[in-house]
Image (tube, rainbow, N blue to C red; front, top):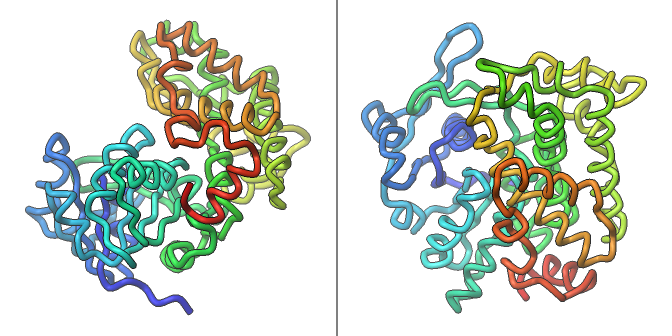
Length: 370
């Protein structure tokens, strides 16, 4: 049985970070939540009460002890485990902090969209500092969670469908993640956690397929109910098929698709006759998305297109797997937002891995260095 760390620092103060901090504190781990100055309100709320709080659907509040810090670098030093739970566009900021402050033997787990582990090694390479830390990442949060006020979160655990992979594969941080989150299972490679990005698969198509309603209506829109029509579901299925093709080319044994993961995570009761039926029967069917002129500034676009779809497309090019539907989503999102996501997005080049080919990608994740 894996021994839990006695101390952990959580970098970030959003929904995933607060849920992770509370989960670990309830397990008896001494937890510190640390974030940047611009998120002072969240850190101050934790510091004032000395706890992180969780509100249930019945308005019962559970709380667990936690310290708080506006000095992420200081909070990293000496912690047995560091959990980084921030949007993908925050990976590089915290990767630079970690690269400068980690010591041999510490464990780091990125909890959220994949790619954080790669960003950390890339930051160590830029700084010329190779630390023998144990690094891993999840493919998604093991929760559905929302911040309700500073220091207070609502969250529900997923029953499965979350994968952890180490960099290098099989290091102790994988086992630690599985011990903290029992629904998490070990994957084969961080390329698997990068490519199993459910948000990139199901966020972008219903937005781009319903731009009139998304931008033109005030209020809220049933993104997967009304928005995931049979035609839009075919877009989702094609993105998923392209990602499965990349995973197959990389030699992974797990080729389960998005629809199966909807059931495995506990969002859908069973597989339907097709993806449209499965999505309509899922918890997403009545989930809403805020609409209006600024709707395209949502993370569903600003994170999932440049930090996920662009990276996935570059992996496809590297291993010789075409990604026409993913490329179409990037192109249409760029036009819709007036942003050149191809130029600004994260690709293998950002990690120093462009041009290494299929075998080079696999070797980098096998050894944890390149």
